[in-house]
Amino acid sequence: MHALIVVAHHDPRSLTHSLAAQVADGLKHSGHDSEIANLAAEGFDPRFNFADHAVHRHQVAPPADVAAEQARIDRSNALVLVFPVYWWSMPGVLKGWIDRVFANGWTFEYSLDGGLKKKLRHLKVHLIGVAGADAGTFERHGYSEAMKTQIDHGIFDYCGATVLTSAVYFESESNDPAPYLEAARSIGLKLFETAARPELIEAV
Image (cartoon, rainbow, N blue to C red; front, side, top):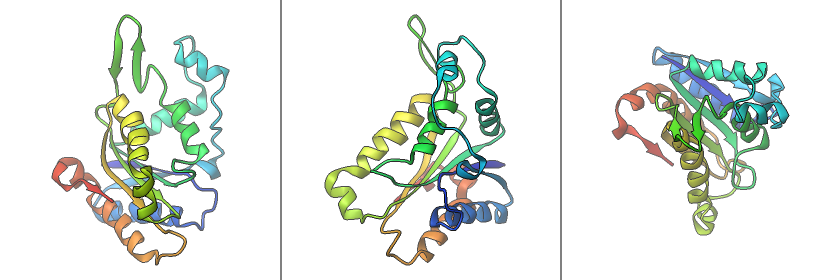
């Protein structure tokens, strides 16, 4: 089995990148393989442009950079997003990746006469957010629920994908990172076991 791990952080020395590496290591030790998509290092352009708008309207084929990302997902059995939490959501580069790659016609099909068709029902998704604030702040202000509504439901459920794990690692700048690194490796070790056994779903 193959997983695409998408990392949205500019600093390769960050905890975000270390967590992604641990997920990949867990996958390797469980007999699976992975590919890490480092959006910052690869220079993916997150700006939704006229060409993307034309794709949305079924007027043209996806640009080459978008088609390449879609092919990465097509050859994957699972998608893992690892990202720092910026302003209670994902960074702009990751949101732009979703804006452009999760296009009408490939991720979903919408028309006035046909309604909505979800086209990613085969895809299993795992989310790892890295937050500086504590869990109490997230719960007190409803940020945790807002993120799940926006990302887990609003993005992935909309196109039929199933979010199997959705974790936020809190106080990342002050806590010992070791437990988070261990948890990320565990996600990798159990990634495809989780896909086969929904009772193993983890939410942090």
